[in-house]
Amino acid sequence: MNWLVRALSSSVGKKFVMAITGLLLCGFLVVHLAGNFLLYVSPEAYNEYAHKLHSQEQLLMVAEVGLFALFIFHIYLAFSLTRDNQQARNVSYARRETKIEVPGPTRRISNWMMATGFVVLGFLILHLADFKFEARSFDYEGKEPFDKAVMILKNPVTMGLYLAGSIALWVHLTHGFSSAFQSLGLLHPKIKCTIEWIGIIFAGAIGIGFGSFVVWAMIQ
Amino acid sequence: MSESLDLTLKVWRQASHDAQGAFRTYQLSGISIDMSFLEMLDVLNEHLINRGEEPVAFDHDCREGICGTCGVVINGQPHGPDTKTTTCQLHMRRFKNGDTIVIEPWRASSFPVVKDLVVDRSAFDRIMQAGGYVSVNTGNAPDANAVLVPGRDQEKAMDAAACIGCGACVAACKNASAMLFVSAKVSQLAILPQGKPERAERVLKMVARMDEENFGSCTNTYECEAACPAAISVTNIARLNREYFKAMLVSDPV
Ligand code: FES
Image 1 (spheres, each protein chain N blue to C red):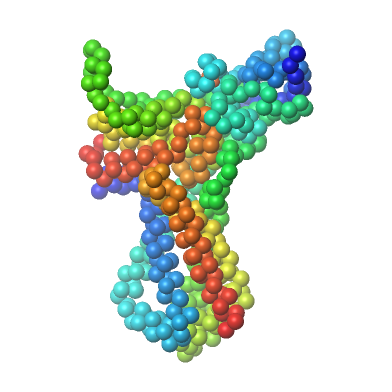
Image 2: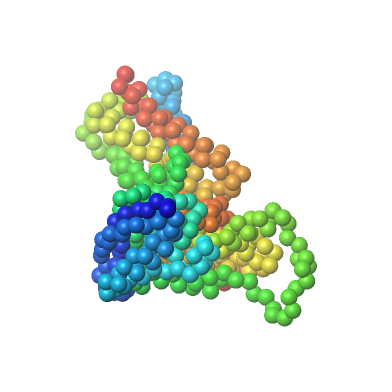
């Protein structure tokens, strides 16, 4: 296994892990969003789904540990790579211009991965505090999942922060999705354009999807 | 008589690797628009020598876009404002009368400044020594056409081999990553039959050396591709990643 650890600790290897964990987290987002859409179906459907999910204790535990590991790897590598990258240029330019003539929609966004990543992380922590650990000063007592969700989402602070989180996620994925394919060596010219567009659409769908719950809660 | 330019130059001056560097401002007048950028620097140096000052050190050799030594950052762009052009191929007609031109060396920890605009790019040589070659027996040259190469592969290998190793990719990258250079060198050999036997070992060794030299990693920003005077495509980086992936999983450990 030594060879694997060694190969994955190089700059190229770290980007593999970054890409794979990122894409797996994208998978999680899809599942999570699909579950949330039951809010739009009916309170009963959402409650039933939530209860069923929470009754699968072992499964949930495995999933949570897995997700936690994915996040940890993704975040740790973000810091590790950023540090390496900063060290690679010790003196900065007095003047810097791009030569990219028509910056493609996803290109400049690579500069925003750390910043948007931080916002998403903040969003995630708040979200876990709200829903999982019930740590905020809401009246959680005896509420069904649907009512709990509406109560939390209607809070103005939640609204602002969740919206910011969704937008940050949107931006993050706009670069991250197609970039992951490049890092894995899969962006062959044959599929490059397609993957880039899928990335843009996917990021938009995820961002708008999660953002929509806040807007929906407003009119509840 | 052709048009001429009056210019303000802000040039990075640094006496030696350890010395503190700073920008110095120089005025130049009567620069012909037909001059190349390096000829303009020659004129500046003549003035400086006549005044008894130290001329600006800059690298150059072929002055026709082949050797890759002449790279400097001009107004924030490696090799200046043109695309697919080296500094030596840049002409003064690209500038306007009264312009201020900022000239800096490549900025990367792996490319320490030797003097003024000259940087030490031997990190690239060490990456090449790590695996950027094919091992062949010496002796008579092999028969022409003994090894057939499909036309498509020839094209791809030649496109990658167009890299002149100037370092503009590193200079342009926000992470000072050498991925475009290394990927071109890995690709040009991996595509050809002569390079295939060593391809797994080559990519692992070259990437390891690249990391040892403290180049940054690739964040897929693609500034390198835009700055490259030889138009090396980032598709080579995808190929490098692929080669690395394959080498990692299905090759004998080196
Ligand atoms: S001097 Fe040789 S490429 Fe410019």
